[in-house]
Length: 332
Ligand code: HEC
Ligand code: HEC
Image 1: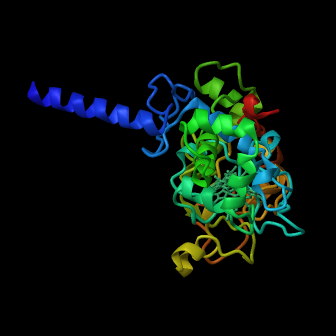
Image 2: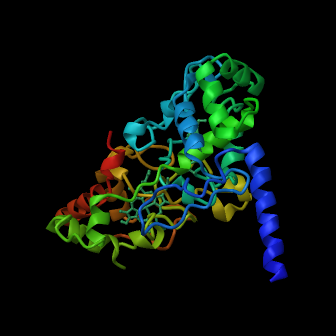
């Protein structure tokens, strides 16, 4: 009895102290909506979800003033109409520079444990904060960003709603963006309708493709596993014979990891061409042909990658299944 009483006091004190700093995050009704059969999204204790933060994050996502020369926003590379990926192999950065890697989709990023093709990003808030300054992203000074935002009453209002009556600070830009990208949850494709019991949602070819995808013959689902279509592990799939980008090696320094990359999700794959870490495969046909031949020879190629002997109609079935993973909510 005494124990319960005590913990209640602690809880009330906690609520009051949170209320002073962060207005919305203690509102228990302020919950992220996601497909029911998807896992809960865990937000860090220091950056809990609120609608106001998500709204501010959405505005900042397309805000070009975050970049040094006001030329690009997050959405310049993570294009909403391409399921938050880009439609070029490599993307334009500030000046005349281009990215080294293909822009990954941000859908379901809320569930990722590590970020980037090589897993070099470990904390979303911290990574996005660094993006503001990184020459390869916004190349800006955080003081300049705050100064620019402070001149716009609209932003002053949105920051107040999201973080309470405090000053605009650069870390809050990163926090709001981190909340927003975690709301990009995709789980309403035709394939999802099918697995939830609407058996008319897929046609016969797509069902044949689905069976191939989940079979021991292709091994696709051994790496592109679960509801999110990724094991979040690092593999080499024999995309190329030569890797100019060593991938996971940069993080672990182990030769065993040379040419390994994080398994990408396949949700909305139809919208995120071109493919692979360097965007070298333009069409799904090319991707499937590469898998069908067992990948190109490479020392660290995964043993799950082998010659598949799929005939043309089987290849087409597999592609049709991949296209059933498109979520209409992300097709803008
Ligand atoms: C110039 C293009 C560009 C801009 C602008 C950009 N990104 Fe990215 N983003 C990339 C590339 C390329 C990668 C992959 C980097 C890697 O693997 O090393 C990436 C990776 C990410 C990831 C990790 C995705 C994953 O699958 O692990 C997140 C999250 C992300 N970006 C969010 C953002 C946010 C938020 C902004 C705006 C602050 C932003 N990006 C601006 C190109 C860009
Ligand atoms: C050994 C694990 C593994 C297996 C098995 C596997 N994949 Fe992959 N898949 C990956 C990895 C890792 C990448 C990224 C490779 C790269 O960038 O070089 C990838 C990339 C892809 C891409 C491009 C995604 C993008 O966003 O660029 C598609 C499409 C794809 N795989 C489909 C399949 C299909 C279909 C099968 C079965 C025929 C399959 N995969 C089997 C691990 C695997």
